[in-house]
Length: 279
Image (cartoon, rainbow, N blue to C red; front, side, top):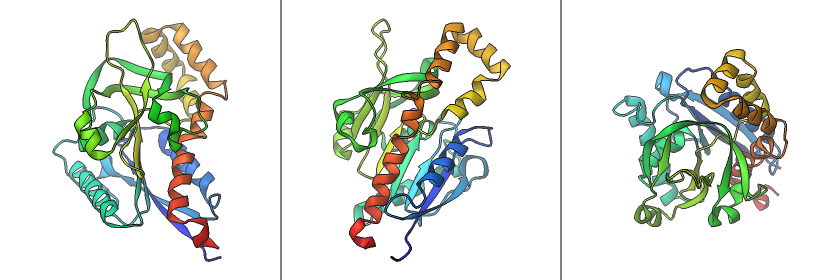
């Protein structure tokens, strides 16, 4: 069998802030290497927000990371213009070529994705979402391959002061986009539920939560005395205990980590290198 390789670009939007997300993404790619139809996985990292490095259009798959601060911080900057230029190229390529390019947007990138495609309003939350939260599949999400293997209500790491709400039905219909899941039901809170995952097309999808997060990355934060004190001060001791309990339950964050991005990569690689092409 001829050796096949899929090229992945990780777009780092953490702006040089210490994080666990980049390690988690690389771990998942390393675990995927050679496991799907024998296809090798190689990747490059681009510090897009910090250094202005934006990948070219020569990659097969793009993973766009989370990051700190407002999704509007990049407005008018060269890095965002170049980032949107890359999205233009991916969109045009997919509309004109049989062999597609795939992109996954995470958290901060999901909010920028909403700005780019204009499918919803990106606004500041009344209070910050922080921790491991329940996420509810929609009817579309229940049959979408991205979330196959997760229960109808599953758990994800969620850290954000911003959100995407008020989906524009006209834009969504024009794109053929689907809402895959929503934030938890809060009957006592008279606020619209935020979008937690949207599929733009077969090749383009994003999540508001962090599907790459693993228990190690969460313990990294919550084992620090200063972080525990911060959580207790802002949310109370009960919230901290709940987070630790979620981390110790393999049906929660571990299941999400082992499902969402692996499903995305499996689908993309299988379509880029079908079995019949490899035999």
